[in-house]
Length: 158
Image (tube, rainbow, N blue to C red):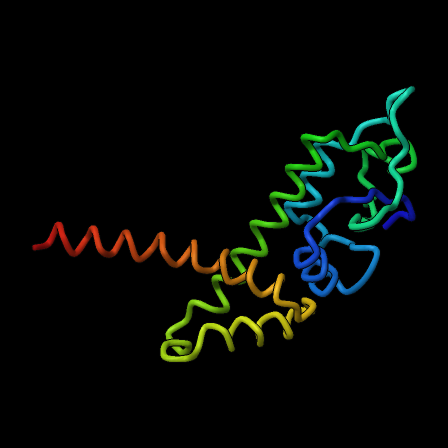
């Protein structure tokens, strides 16, 4: 892994989850991960008059990996659309893990509120009401999609 960093703007809960997931700061993505594939495809040479990527409030440092054809000392620029694609990939992984962990048969009958607080604690997410509300809303939206689908199936069978 190189010492060259990019700084990606993520929501607090997402940045905290990713730090916990990757083992610390700066974030290092697993070899052959989708995140690294996005970086590999989109890293470019910094434009002559392009802004230098600077750390800032709410920006998460991410270490750029070495690729055979892309030395991070030279290829260290990520365009805005590429940054959005990387952030969306991270968010999708978050939602998948949340769904996988919370929507289990063993969780039936347990209070959703307690499950989410415990999940946040286990995944290194700061225990704030803002984070809880955001995560609860994400989970509720996913759960509602499946409930609507099952309701439609029941109506068709009738």
